Structures are given as C-alpha cells and as structure tokens.
Image (cartoon, rainbow, N blue to C red; front, side, top):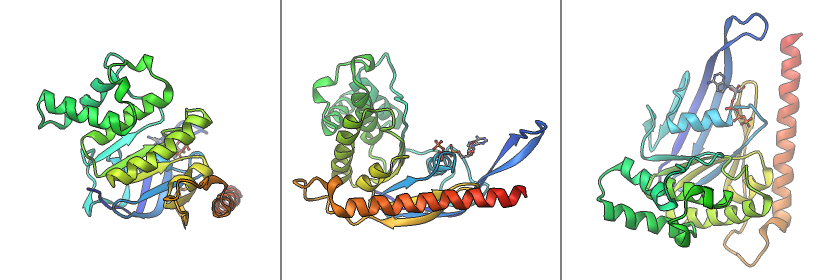
Length: 273
Ligand SMILES: Nc1ncnc2c1ncn2[C@@H]1O[C@H](COP(=O)(O)OP(=O)(O)OP(=O)(O)O)[C@@H](O)[C@H]1O
C-alpha cells in the first residue's frame, strides 16, 4: 500500500531571535511551496543547505504544522505523526541496549496488534529484506554504519507504512557503502511499493534514486523545478551511473541548483539595498 503526498502553497514561518538586537522576529523558511508525489513514487529533494528540505520532511511527517497552505497524505490533511508514515534520519536512531531484531520489534510494539511471536517473525522478515538475517542478535555497537542504517530501514518499513521519509539517510556513510545501500533501497522500494521522499545534498544520489528530482531554492524555500529522470533501472547489467543520460541529468540539476543559488543571492542583495 502507498499514498500520495501533496504540499499545496505551503508556507512555514519560525519565531527566532534577531541577530541584531536579540528581539523576537519571524523567519520565513518556506513560501509558496508546491510538490506532489504519486503513490508508489520515489522523489528526491535537493537544494542548498538551509533551503528548508528537512522542514518539508517534518511537515509531511507531521512533526511540524505549516503556517499556511496544505499538506495532504493519501488525500487527508496531516495533523500530526502517524503510523502511515515512517522517517529515517541521518543519525542512527537505534536503541543501544536492544539487538538488531529487538530494534525492529520496537516499531511493531509501538504499532500494536501483534503478539510476541508475530513480532519476532515480522522483524526477521524485514531484517531479511535488508540483507541482515545473520545479524539479528547483534547489538548496534557490533554493527557497521551501513548495517545500522539497514536496521533503521527495516524498522521503518516493518509495520507497513504507506510513506517512507528519508532525511540524508546515507550521509554519514563511506562512498562504497552508500552506493551499495542506494542499490538496495531501489530493490526494497520495488518490493514494497512504498512512496518514498528522499532528501540529499548529493546530486548523483538524487539522479540514481529518484524517478523525479525536486530542486529547491532558498530564502524562502520553495520548489523551483522538478526534473523527470529517464533511466532504465531494470537493466542491472548496466552501470547506470556511467550512462550518458545519467551525466545529462546530473548536469541539468547542477545547473538548476547553481541558478537557484545565484537568484537567491541577487534577491538577498536587493532586499538589503
Ligand atoms: N524550529 C526552528 N526554529 C527556527 N528556525 C528553524 C527551525 N527549523 C528550521 N529553521 C530554519 O529554517 C531554515 C530551513 O531549515 P532546514 O533544516 O529545513 O534546511 P535544510 O535544507 O534541511 O538544511 P541542511 O541541508 O543544511 O540540512 C534554516 O534557516 C533553519 O535555520
């Protein structure tokens, strides 16, 4: 099962203290942001640091409520966190005193409706999905960074959410592990059919994973372009990253990011002048 995600004319204003005199003032983090993700689609979001990518994810997760506009999941307004949506963060969020299996079971305990045996079976099924069947009894400190993130993914998917929200989940990993997990994520996404929103700083990661890539610009944050990625991901014999279409999309997004950055700087100069 998977759900659509719609952000319509979303604005997000935070109360902050002025850099100048420390007085409270408003900071417009997002303004007029539109984005639609179809059920079962994987969309990557890229943009300069501080443009509001995590804020977008928090809104869909229901951790923040927008100041204006609408955020819908499966056609329903988001009013708070829910079991239909799971989040994977960059920092490993495993409980150190629980095994890999115990960490996956945690999500099932929170979801309720299963007895101990069912939870154990389900946890093993999802550890298998992320290739960790042989590591079920290991504690987080006995796992590599990539393995910890796999456990986090297994935990996030184990209770069958319709939407998976990923905030730079592979950001702390070395390049090789990262590429490996990207490939695994494509396989998991195909198998589960979950709608995925994946935030990254890395243009190559976005092109590799996304069916579409949303490019954000900052100050205030909005989606300035959405790029369709036309790559044949089914042909696993091919090194997709060295295909000419891959280079084309990478350059296209790089150009969009650069011009969004230049525009933001110009607008900032005009605002100050
Ligand atoms: N709770 C908050 N209170 C005040 N300002 C906030 C809050 N959350 C985010 N911001 C500000 O909103 C802007 C967007 O932040 P956000 O973390 O969404 O950006 P980002 O694109 O994810 O950044 P990065 O790529 O560096 O992680 C930033 O200027 C940040 O300082």
